[in-house]
Image (cartoon, rainbow, N blue to C red; front, top):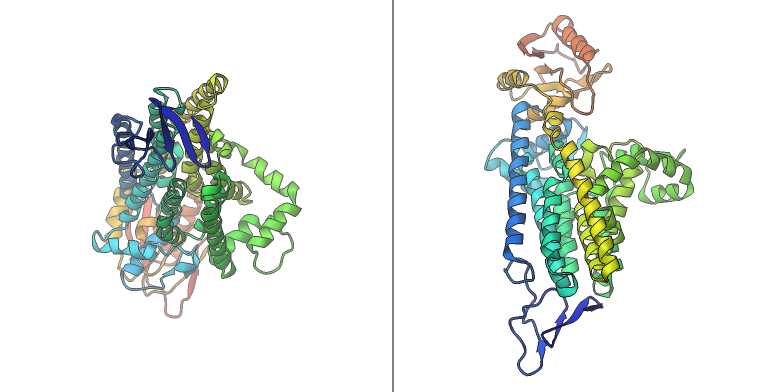
Length: 543
């Protein structure tokens, strides 16, 4: 069997078989020609193909079990109040939009919501409020979109194996497909992605994987609506599409032209929103993360400034990258480093992982911030399987290389899963059950029109209001804009390690003694106070 211009040609029982966009339905030979012609491309889910039906069943069971585990973790996080400022910012905007505020102000960020990465998809998501008016909806959405992304990835991999057809040894195809499903179900970074509050990168990743899969399959008409859906999820979706476009260009003639269009649209999207200051909070993440590349620069740092700075400061680039190599390697070995050798893996790896590695603040490349790197991971897995397929098609020596590579990959995957997965619930459920019970008792006592200042690690559940601020100590000053101000102090830390017992104790004493606030509740280390500021008070500084 040979490959040419995206088509595979081989022999089957003396007849010529041509496969263009996918596996053909070999049950319909063209009479008298000896050529088997597919009346239509085989859809990956219609039961026709080279892989047995049980392969799909195994994949769906694994991914279904993963979804149940993720939903259970998210539900327990919500019950434990183990949700931080990121969740508070999004849930406040979600609540505000659902109540008719179409340009919601996020008090924790100090900006209008749209200026935080142009995440316009929250507007349709706000309709979920009318089905179930609790922000846990956002956590469940996060779980579903991550697993749906994996479902599309599994379908893509299964289709790639089917496209290879007889070019790989008998019995290997099901092993590749099931192995990919196992990798998806055991990937620790998928669980880390859903564990850290709620973010829009996973939603953008879902639509981007659909864009990549349909581009690979030649279904370009679907891209007219998939590309816009990806873009409205996050300004970074523009960079993701740039990566997919690069993959399309590298993959061959059939995908080159639509790849150029997709990449150009994505780059234009990033340029526009970077220019207006909506990439990060008012564009600040650009300067805080990549400002070291443009020392002495005045004014707003743009995309061109960053690229030019990286080219002219290779020493700074190498230094920052060296501090993050261990994390990036751990991401890659789980899903197959060899995926970087595939056109469909390298594009997203370049536009997602490289910027994360070069982030001077380190915020984008932490284990706990896996959602930042998640959009590249399905593509790397797809690329890894495609590289294995190419090796399996190239003779005995290449097949031995594929076998050794797959065995090493499986070993690393199992090792990381065994080490990382058991400790994940402990890492993300930092609020004890007694403290959670006290927080649950206090929450309904807070007037709906009150301003709330709450410890950052438990801030997420208290954001269904117009004014909420996270307490992160260091002589923090918070504005006073309501007649009643409620303080909620909890000693529990998130992985960010923002709070200390000393800071909590000092703030608690200050509010109780200096402000003479009324105690709402105290127990399990949690203290809550209600304070009526004197007329004319505009701010208060906590110790």
